[in-house]
Amino acid sequence: MTKLRVGVLFGGCSGEHEVSINSARAIANALMTGQNQDKYQVLPIYIQKDGLWQGVSVARGVLESGIPLVSEGKGNLWQFPPEVSDVDVWFPILHGPNGEDGTIQGLLKLMQAPVVGSGVLGSAIGMDKIAMKMAFAEAGLPQVKYMAVNRSQVWSNPCVFPKLVDEIQESLGYPCFVKPANLGSSVGIAKARSQSELEAALDNAASYDRRIIVEAGVVAREVECAVLGNDNPKASVVGEITFNSDFYDYETKYTVGLADLIIPAAIPDSITSQIQERALQAFAAVDAAGLARVDFFYVEATGEVLINEINTLPGFTATSMYPQLWGATGIPFPELVHQLIELALERG
Image (cartoon, rainbow, N blue to C red; front, side, top):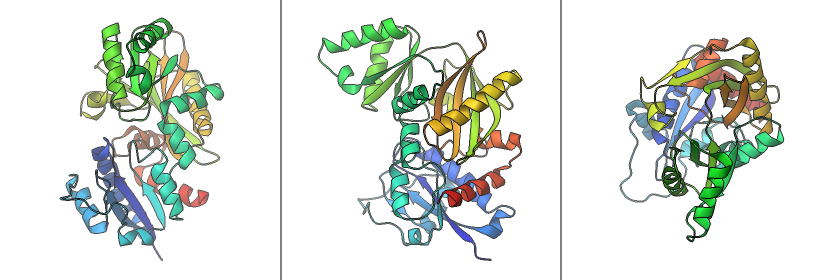
């Protein structure tokens, strides 16, 4: 039996480089576990932080060590390792910009091999929080009140910026959250409780992205649902994230012991069903494919369910929420990886 050669593409030019290495390690191990080892041959391909592509031998070393590789001197950014031409199906696990925003998906599509996950459109909409929220609004999905801001409004003359701050205060109030529109893993996000904090948060977010989103704060439980499929996707059980920090920031998200995942979430069955239904609606609204994790706010006091965001390439370590949700739904990690490859081949 000829094994399918799976190109596990990881690393990348984003602040989530190390997260990508951990996800790729888990996926590579799953492809070499149980029945998968008879079906698949893993071809790891590593993209350094400076954009240099490295072939199988170097990539395996990075997976084993977990340590990013740094080049000495400038290499050829457009020279792909020879193993790239051997790949039958791509499994990109590149988080953040240049990884889940449609750029790498377009490149891989040109290589004419099936790709796990969303295509260019779904990835791009899912990455840009402003475009995402516009798609959700068009689909009729309830969400928190928000404002879209451009860097030019923040880094502007002394007349424009104060008017912008006044408008945000009047429209959204405090607390509010300021986020770069195109970063993941809570990078660059700040909670503002006063005018001075809002001004600092806008300036900080503008240093990361020319598009910024400001959202009204809400007292709610943070719950998540995983989606698996293409044209007829399925929703997993619902999980909840609990933490003691002020909000779910980068440190809380990636420091062991600072956040807990509760699966399944202790919420009413009717709320679970509502979240699952809206997760599937969100998946369709952005034209996602393969996999996604959809995050919600459950306002227990009023019974409202508000969509927060969709992540078309969520963290994929063995302890990440996405695979854990499917594990609790009855699909173990190795089987989940297998199904995602099957979905990629189905979509072509």
